[in-house]
Length: 173
Image (tube, rainbow, N blue to C red; front, side, top):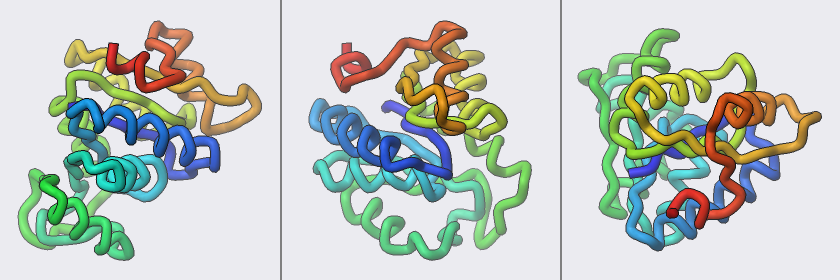
């Protein structure tokens, strides 16, 4: 499994890169893990499904709740395409501020590596990357424009030693 995470404020560049990299990665038998939120997470799940791959959505809420609710179609598509939707919470428990970072530890823990597409400096994406480091997982980061708020986190990760990912081969190797 490969975690693919990033900003909720996904740019058109982030969407394009997510679609391209995930499509190529899943055709090599890799399952994509992400957090189901709008932005990069949801795009990673969609790209995996569209490319015929599998994906695992780790929910920040109860297992019976679709959150955000407007992604009900994506939730169903994940299940219909041999994917998984998992949560450590029961029933219809609503997400809270603390359930998102707790969910991120599961995303990192299920995966051999984490691919960060876009991230702000104060983001849950960087929490996932930090957890992955603690779990001794490999971190990949996609470089972006230095003028973009959602590139600041990925550039920080690269400065700290994350592998640069500019194509699927960088991750697959």
